[in-house]
Length: 529
Image (spheres, rainbow, N blue to C red):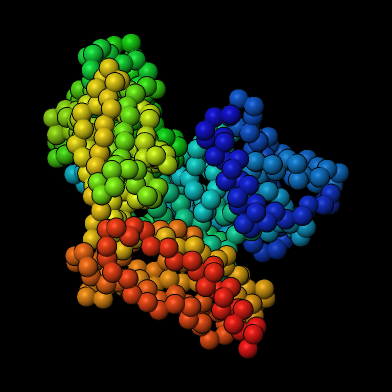
């Protein structure tokens, strides 16, 4: 199953859960027009996915449809499929997951019209215009257009004046706006031009259905085409200089347009070369097994020429060992530690290959240390910026956070030892009792324990609720005090468990706050009273 088919299957299931699928029965279903009278002519298109990832269209006339509706249950036929009813003078009617028990009533016909222009404002004749996304979370984008010969309504070309005209469609059973996305492409002087826009047709809002008593034409201004990019280059090993075959360069989301493909990828050949064209690109992801993945990001304006040549050197991931030491005790840090790394390498004029925590998956740029403060694993060869922090995410008030610049050897024998400095403040280890969730809609039985930390000489403060094992309250200097207030929050008046001050001292690291014992002791006192 390819990526598009997998995504469609997942999203189909999501919509079915969110909106529900109408229960089907083996009964005859009449098709009526906007006036409520049976239509005299209609073609019913059933669109089903095939095993090879394509789509198959089966057409039926009214007579065949009536026979099938009378003796077959169509629920199974709708699994991952669509049904389109095409009747003259009516809007296209699109169904997913099932049909209602009542007669099918079509809506009045309407049209989506517009003009396609270039960057200079001149009409573009012969541009390929495609329409998709007939409602939130539908799959008429890619899949319907794969069978354009069988379903001709969703694609057209502009005339000599650059105008296009497409028939409107309504997805039945939804009560939100069926916004259309219009994509236009054209070739001019050997270059690909592309543009897109969202056209809101309000096809599913009842008010518009009732008000649409005659054909309506929707035109929301010209659709401008801009020249697409052409990026080529070569990918090599940063250490050996040899070509890397099989590196994948891809772009996603708004970088291209989903009406054509869910993602666009190119793979380097045996010489490490690649060409990517016919799209508009803001940045590229690059990855290859055994190498550190990253993003190719332009550092300055580069679209003036329309063609960019890159030279990308990827860093191999090699074995390394990193040890963290508490500078005060000489031993391992007393709290769980993690680290992230980043780097930026030149990749061409005005371009850089970057990696950071937001690039790709978080696991690609974040490492965790064991209880002894040691990490053994793969790091990218060369100089990297290595930042250590407490827990699994960086915070401004981290007592251990520190950055280092290291040079990871390509031979894989790198062994680093970083000394961490305790910052002024009080580090608390909090033993939290389990929160009690409400037992009724009125919330009659609920409670949670909150620990409030605040520096006496400043406005720095923190709170620690259930799930937070460690919490740090920074101060201006050693010897300053931190106030600790512990209370039980509940439907009844809050109950104070503790109100005390602690002095910031590097020798007491961390301070234990046993909220579990405090709450139990408070309950015992209440029972005795």
